[in-house]
Image (cartoon, rainbow, N blue to C red; front, side, top):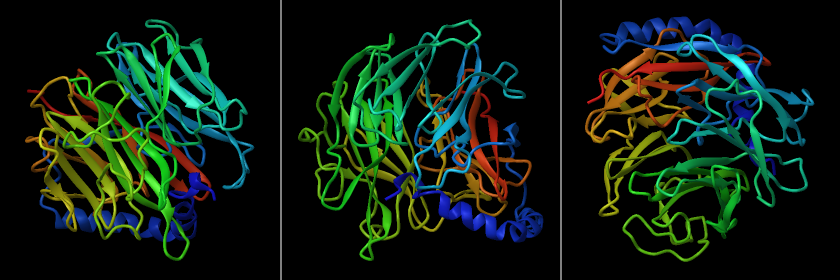
Length: 443
């Protein structure tokens, strides 16, 4: 079973067959949508920059982890440049030539500072509270089952990182990382349920099974990690199972949190959980997806913890937004009807990003995904921590897909929200794009 290909290749192949039709109709659809909408959102345009016109099949590979960050030394972005071998079939083991690129002019231009080839998707990025850059990825072709952990010195050219190798971590393409400033350590959540703790020097602190890999109905797949200001570690997981007809499907989404750096876990309402709980709907963790969504494929696009709430967006029957209160464990805000809208902008896509100035309580929250009507990138803003949403900004040009739209969960100090996505520009032509959004004055 090719789990890494569940989410994208079938849609990618469909785009090949309908690309010319979509291209012919795209401009007309954009003009029609614009005519029906009263105005463009007042905050203006989303700025977009073409980073690479010759990307690989899985260029930015989904929105579950962070592949764009800002540091005092610039903006950094990772992506897969080329499959190795380039004609590898979906189900064949392959490696990727991946790149770390850097911009020192606010995202107008990017230069490659480091590249390498491994059995991985685009590496995950993180920044510590001193502004140092860290990067991590697995290599599924290496029998040691390693994770590579890179440390870059501030102020350097970023060409020669220090690299640590941590072995025996079961992972393929799906993984996430988060920095814990309270305990001064990194967490890496791997695809098959492991949680790895690493110090800033790249030494293994401990390795635990956060989730059991497989339950009766589904197995672990896409992890999400976040650390809130109170030092609580938050872990969410998309699982994969099968429909009644035997089709591979994203089965459901589960959540739990840890007050002690991953040693023990609990539910939203504080109920303690057993060690390594079952990851699917038969287990004890909080299920985020709805009761009638087991046969339609549900996939968690983004998770954010802000101001006492944990926020989720996921693809189900439509694009859902959910908010849970961390004091009571109750769901207290939703946009899970037919549309996730604000004003004249409706978001709807498999991927997306939730972001905010997490270091400033009461600051606005933003959601970036694809605007349904205009076939382009759109951004909603919430001034009340997710209870209500309003249109914020749109990209100036149309895009065919905005595949794997993600970005930095933290809005930078200059007020810009930054991210990336892969554009299906034509048959066998994929492009890497960077975007940035001026979020306005931060309260």
